[in-house]
Amino acid sequence: MVNWNFEETHPAIRMIKHFVATNKIPHAILLVGAKGTGRLKLAQLFAKTLNCERLPKPCNSCSTCSRIDRSVDFDVQELKISESNQKILIEQVREFERRAVLTTTSGKYKVAIIPQAESLTTGAANAFLKTLEEPPPMTKMILISPTIHDLPSTITSRCSVIRLPAVSDKEIDMALDSQAKSLPPGHRDLIKRFSEGRIDWALKMACNTNLISELVDLLEEFDSALSGDIVSKMELANKLGDDRQAAHEALNTLALKLADEMRIARKDGASQSLANYRLWHKNTTRLDQACLAISSNTMLKPTLENLFLGIS
Image (tube, rainbow, N blue to C red):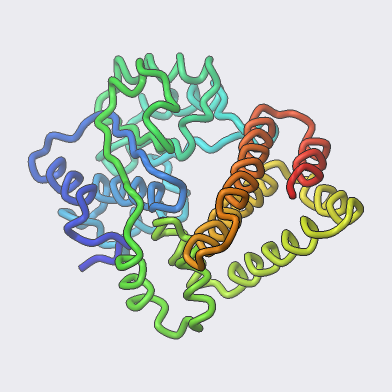
């Protein structure tokens, strides 16, 4: 069995195998699921399945598979968000269109992978729509988005949708048993509590002790700052306020932390459960508003300061 971090019987894998076996490969596929459920890994798997030199399934050892894994294959292009404004720009779509009409180096498919398709600007989405309507021969497009509703219906209606639901704790346990046998029990418990069914995230954390240490440090920083005085909260906002993407990921971790604390409180039968729920709801509402503001390119540090001062 090829190690895909997916079971061979996973519905998404079965669907991809069906596309290839019947030679009825859609020109556009939309992978829908939360970050960390293996969306990009599955997109790369599909690209390798299409262009691997040793079909019928990716060998993960030929030169094509190696280039796709390293994101340096000329025929497989990833349209990543611009660091300056966290969007996918029309110029990136135009570049793919230029490449798509060129002869493939492998003689197989040109593939576009869009890891955060919800970040397409209006102009980029309109340009991409034209490519979807009239795709060049031997061209395939793989879009990735948290939900189908994050993209215009004009785009989603032209894609075959594959959903990647969160996996169960049992499946994550099995994956950790298989690929991270030496993981300390404390780290294993932390990963399971914060995975939220994201198997790719869980395996990435389990195989990198530095990532686990960073998570533990961040959780301790949140505990210390949010239970501390105004100065400690302002210092945390200042620390996270230099990198918009990193701040967004930190706030996602804070949301998981709040949800985990609420689950533990319910499990322990904490008194004043209604008051606890109201406090949790107030804090998560503030957090959601801050995440939305950050995504809308508001001033980062003032947004974080306002959030941390308002959380109790």
